[in-house]
Length: 127
Length: 132
Image (tube, rainbow over all chains, first blue to last red; front, top):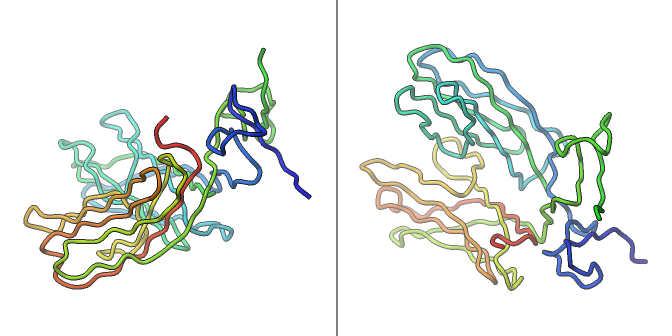
């Protein structure tokens, strides 16, 4: 027995549309946010801190983490990646993220010359 | 005429704004085509290697690759970075699709291409087009 829900994009026939022309299809796993959170940070001057975020037991690879760090000196959010990126050459605050089967690791380096109060958001996506 | 399907998060009304929705059919969801994992191996002196994964969708799909970069932490990172090795040299990790394959590539600089290496990777290919 065939069953499910398909919803096509505008002007596409749901009965004949290619998968790429569907909004969703219950036959295709969709990208979902399976864990998310916000961490408030108070980072001492001239230190590197790694925040270890336990992954829920239902998580399995491949994962698509999204991590956004607030950079106070720029008054903006910066997306982190696998290597440290200097966001502000003057104040030298930078960060990166990595993960394994158990944890997400977010590392922030503070060489601004002062303590920094900031935060980051993370979204752990899975399909 | 306005039509579609909306599903709200707990304790929100289905007529609320987008960020309160679990699903809003006005916004396509990434739909997984295939996912998998493997080992990319390099031979010393060859400058790197590329893995080709066939999808045969006939268009460039969205994709994501992460892997264990075997320096430092040995944890998973997105396979899209330049890893500095010293002397202004670095290793390049990148991935890109064409209409039939996903390419997972590493280019090793002379400082790190002195021994055979193996890299674990995960990939996911979506039905959704990378370019519209």
